[in-house]
Structures are given as C-alpha cells and as structure tokens.
Length: 237
Image (cartoon, rainbow, N blue to C red; front, side, top):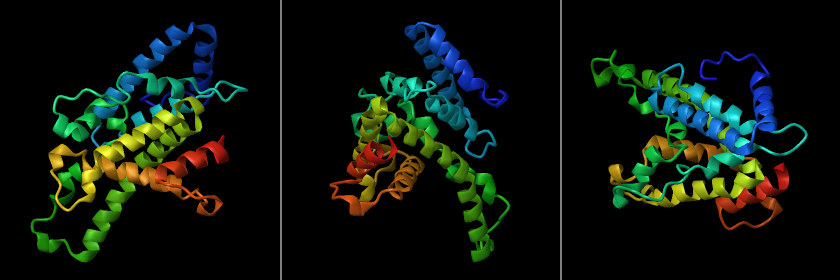
C-alpha cells in the first residue's frame, strides 16, 4: 500500500474477501496491525518528503472501504475502537494537549508541518533578500505542499463522519482537540503545553472545508459541531 504498487481495484477486492472469508476477530487483528504500520510510516515521513502523502492516502483507502451493496464501513468502525484513538492517560497533565498529538492514532497523520523545512531559506544569506515577491513565492510554495495532504485529511474525517458507528467518536475527537487547545485563542500561549500549531491549523482547515457545505438557513445551531452533526446526519447518509 505504501509503495502504491497495487493495481486499481485490488485493495477493495482483497478487503472484501478478507472480510467475508475470515472470522471478524482475525480480520480486526490483521487490519489493526496494518493501521499500526501505516501510523509508524506517517511518523517517520518528513513533511518535505515526496512520500508524505502516502500514509494519508493508505489510511483514506482503508477507512473508505465499504462492503458491497451495504453502507457498512468495517475499518472506519474499527478505528475508534483502538486503544490509541483518544488516550486519557498522560505523563504530564499540564502538557496533555501536546502529548496527545504523539499518542493518539490520528496525530501523525494530521500533524503535517511545512514549517520544519529550514533548507527552503538557506539560499538567502540575509533577510533583506526576502523581498515581497520572494516572500510571496515561498508562501505559495508552502501552501501548495499542503494541498495534497490536507485533501486526504479531509476525506478521512469526512468518511468517519459519514459512517454512522464512527460519527460520534469522530465528532468527540474533534471536540476534544478544540477543548484541549482553547488557550491558543489567547494572547499568551505556552507552546510546549499546546498541540503544534500545524496540527491545529490542519484541523481548522478540515472543519472549515466541511462548513462550506452547510446551509445555515436550514436551521439554528449552537456550535460548529452541531452544524457538522446536522450536515452529516441529514444530507450525506
């Protein structure tokens, strides 16, 4: 999967045969091992690597798998049942917002950071060389690098919300991340106590893309997450 060498249609057919011909606990064991390996790959891939999108694409393909002629997405349902979906035990309670990015399953997939590429600016000897056109060029280059990974992030979260058994778990995950990082809205932030800014910005991007599809004239909502819940319950499923 990570080498992208499967022929088109092979993976869904393989998953279908596995799901149909093996006991459920065996299927879950195999898939959980696969998910763990993909998560490790996401941790090891540097954001400037051309392969950074591959673990995200693998996860999207797995959670998107639907048993033919049904609305059952077994892997999307299995994912929130993992012990590392939303850990509750922390070494440092004060810095749990930062710690959970490293320990929760989705952390390495969402935390794609374009700010760690120092080589991008090494060609400029002095800050005076960073004229407005050059700054605009660098900014565009960095934004373009994020487009692919963020598109995969969106599809992963959207699929988890479309899938009825995982919907509340996914909403709960988003709410928990917002709650733990609420201090980022303040003027003074202790960075090592909060999730990395790249992680927070990527979540905001995903939720913003989802909110574009919401018709606020259809009803009154109390929060962004109520809107998300309304949209995915009524308009998608």
